[in-house]
Image 1: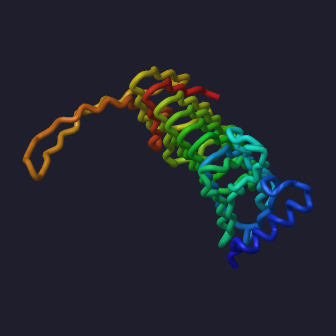
Image 2: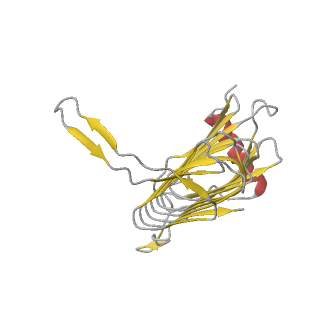
Image 3: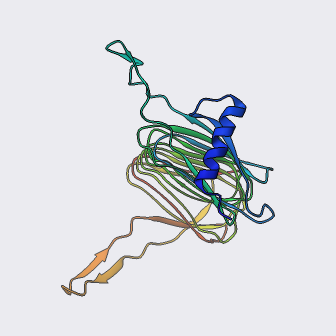
Length: 267
């Protein structure tokens, strides 16, 4: 049965009272419907940082901390300020899928979330925060806009995307036959991978360099031709991707940035 917001709001209040936190600080434990099966966790906030830790626990622990707006004075014209923007967070669970979400653009929220190592994870933030993920064995999707993405002790797969920030990931293992992608506009992409990982690389950087600790066979890029149906125009596209196979090739491994370097390190 779905645990809707009203029930979790009550738990949230009880948690604040139990641990002595203020309204904007506390922790919450959310169980899965069936802990014996693989779970999925989605976390999305508009402003703030998210840290996700894979652990041996069978539920999800959410530690939350609201940010105080430093730009506002506590007093004005002799009057004491009472905050008008309370923390906004909704949590739900259905069929082993836990959703954690905050839609507030004005009130920042920092989260530290402990999950089972085997979960599939989708983590997303937009402003004024970074993403850090560790000890996860499942599939990871990480999206940011103004902040960096980092991951360590990963034994699964990652699709990571940010705009203003670097991407750094260290893999203990990779999921076989699973494509991965890493894209940013402003920032380096720095990946450390097992020496035996197999992939067909597809890499591009406009204002940076590519450095690799792996030997890979470069695949020749053939010009792509296309005829537009409406105008009948025949066009030739030059492919400026760097392509190559590592350890004989495998699933596509796409890495792209604009301002920054690309690093492929061998563990």
